[in-house]
Length: 68
Figure (cartoon, rainbow, N blue to C red):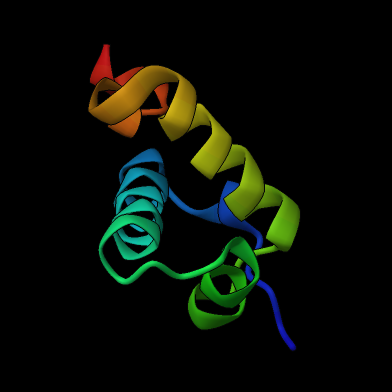
């Protein structure tokens, strides 16, 4: 499986991908592993994003500097 390097994406693209992944975890009840495969993101990255969402809630959607 090819995984994309999310750090190579623009901050806006990173945020959009993060939001899509978290929404899939919430609404489709995907596991972290399934979401990682579905979106082509490393399992550890998806796990980190999911944990951040669980700790901080919807306000954590904007991860990067351009949102401040």
